[in-house]
Image (cartoon, rainbow, N blue to C red; front, side, top):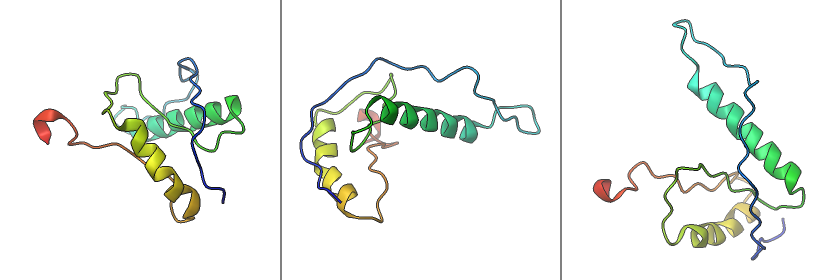
Length: 103
């Protein structure tokens, strides 16, 4: 695999998940959140790679996230490990305890 170095950061406009995504309902009539999230990520990744077919990676972000000052540094640091190690498929910065009042 090619080692990922510094790449030009390209930003695209926010893309809404299509409303026509079918919602899978549970027996109690509620939407299956797991399937809804999976559909959203599939749409996001497919859209990202279709807009940027030569991109070595895609960052999937939500519009209400708060980022630490070292957010991009983190991904630059872990990208080589993901690129070189076939057992790694993803790098995540999600932390349920990442807020000031929970750390």
